Length: 331
Length: 129
Image (cartoon, rainbow over all chains, first blue to last red; front, side):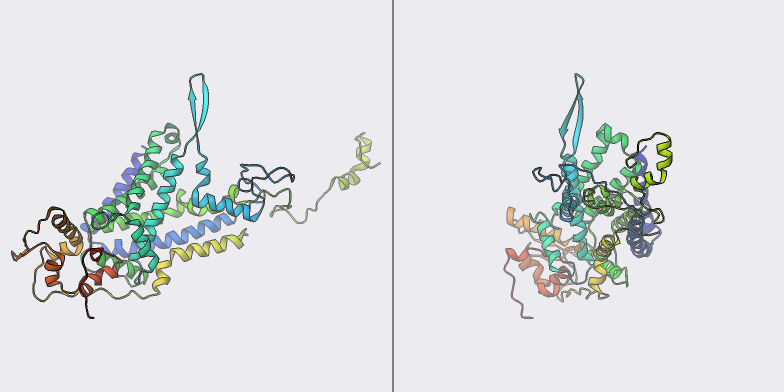
């Protein structure tokens, strides 16, 4: 059920877009109104979510320490895995965000006869996760050629690099293949690995199905069904210049693709996909382990409550302490 | 409610909003010219219907190229209206009607940022304007 319902939900989205455009003829709704709404929800929702997080104070240093902390001079510090400076944290964050370093450390636990618990390295999640995210990034950037009137040089370079092997016409993009393969791996991993399947929820499967469906409709549109790119670009540039026009015939598959992307954008701020913003804000990664060098004061401390040292405490209660035979430091 | 670490979060959000709205500020309201490929004067029908040619001409060209280069088949083609063309050929076939690559092919290709590699093998005819 946890797999089936999200799958049905994505099929329903496809059906809605198909019927809406093919039967009801709502090209303007699906091509203009929904994209604007979804984009506003995406950017607005993303910012609102991050600002919401910013309201939570993180008063204490809680970095996950994965190496030797800064200590005595003759003990070598692991500057990336237990950073105590701004640059150490920066290095750790950049490696985390761009290379998924913590996934690289992923281990698998297996129970063998004995019973014996064995830990081993497991790099598949890291590898396919990285491939998935980077091919997704390349695909998103590549789509910008449809949104800008004058296409800047770096998009041409990216395009040429992505279609490096010049297979077929229209040229085959490597990112398309890698994207579908990697997303399929991420899905099968949830399905086949019993431990991961146990903790997987509809909220895990839905974005996977949605993203796969976006990839498949996009691939269909480019290599199989084919649509009029000039008409589509006119609409896309129109959206970006706030003067959208739907000109001529555009295949229904385009509207299905766009509707799925709209769903993804609208759903984004309310879902686990917010790890895009969250990865930058995870206190277990972005804090320096410097609590022995800097005094961190809890921001919600009441300023009226003054620090009360033990010496002051003893001064206040000395009579009672000596009366009760409690030893005191100062007689 | 106070917000914390805004000296880092705010620049981050500004960068995010800037990247996400890239097409909007990059275009700054200018949608660019819509391509107007020059139509041939000597024929009314192409080898396939216009709708097909608009979306899938590259598939046809790819098939012709494979047939000619790999199998040596330069067979005659009939168009939708039954008019026969001599051979499968870019420069001696297609370009008999679509005379100018600049005014026909490049119009849409430049607009959609597509760079076919025809002229890596063919020698592009010189065009004066």
